[in-house]
Length: 118
Image (cartoon, rainbow, N blue to C red; front, top):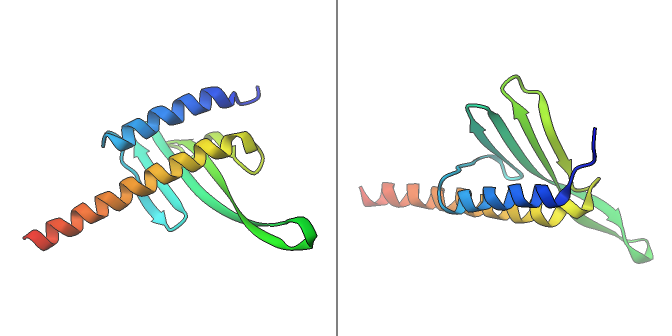
């Protein structure tokens, strides 16, 4: 399998972020660390994965990695990007995670307001 072109991935994810920000692409929170987008063609999962790593002086620090998966309707993974294995993908996956989190939080607040207003 050819190596993943991070620039292409960046372009695809930037377009996803635009759709999220405009309300054209919705995500659901599975838990505090995982989001899912479902479509008729399959689904996309984005997870934040905290890992402990050694830093200078032998101390440990928590670092967040991101796991991005695109799966078909049969559940087979068609694309997987792990920022722990591909550090150059981390900034764009972090940006996507933040956009999704903001969108899901906004959706929840809008729902809360609809309850309060009725």
